[in-house]
Length: 207
Image 1: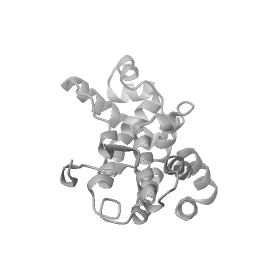
Image 2: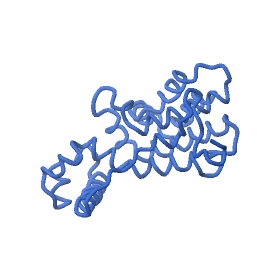
Image 3: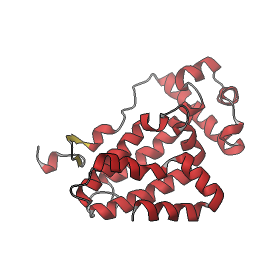
């Protein structure tokens, strides 16, 4: 495969493009798609007005005008709603990494791309902190089962392999992403404010 045919950076341990880690949306009937959009709009509205912890699944179903059974079958619980609401924002960041302008996208050094990723991820995380925390803490280990986390980890692993030849990039990528966990950032920002929390994480992971 030539470079012109390659549609994403390669991992040090795999020839698969990073793009293959993007989850494909399942095909759905028109009525199911309409219900999904109604539910997500209702959840976003209620979460914005009352906070994530102040909203029940029953309230989301009533606001969306759908049956509770439909809501639970489609999303499971509030963490499922959080994941669905975050999906668009995650895809925007992933596409910027794959094909957007440097330094977040291709064309800059690995070190500069890593710094740009950390800054962009902090923007995303702090902008949706309650939802990300819910999606990552729904059950033990939930953060690591989310498809987006696998994308972030692979991207960081690739950059570390290039920036630090000879490093053990796999576990190092996990270690670098650990301070970006939403539960950790919630505690950090709650005690020190977002600006100091952001700078602390940048100083730690980009040292």
